[in-house]
Image (cartoon, rainbow, N blue to C red; front, top):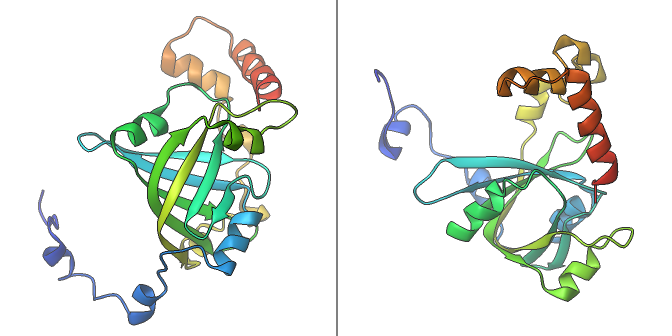
Length: 205
């Protein structure tokens, strides 16, 4: 590919070296500000990859603070009912490195946490995440290696929290219609939408 930058040295011919502040803000522990950010966050994206496969990013959400800070170097996150593809958990079984990006509604700053993860069904961990008598399917434990606040530019450019820039739902077909077309299903989209809505109501936890 013409103009492709295939090495770090090639990249540095285009990009300047990072500032001292960009490097110096990185911690190897959960400081009080990072702890508070995690305690308030209801949503994150987690990145994983197998050593010999593609990378994957998956959303995770819950009540504010659904990720627990166990101590300054360890986090725990429940795994709630999903589609059972297990992309994230399977990747971790092969390669335990993970990257977490925490969001706060209305905040343009984000928090990045990189570490080493494992999947547990330890009874004490499962119990702390039980909701309405329903335990999680498992709990991810993360050994924290890198922590730093991410600047606001991406969310400023996107206007993610700007209500005036929200895309009307009718701009695209319903989820059921898109799945019907992509999977070539012989089903009415309304039936698929109703089944998905029922599942979300009954199996949220």
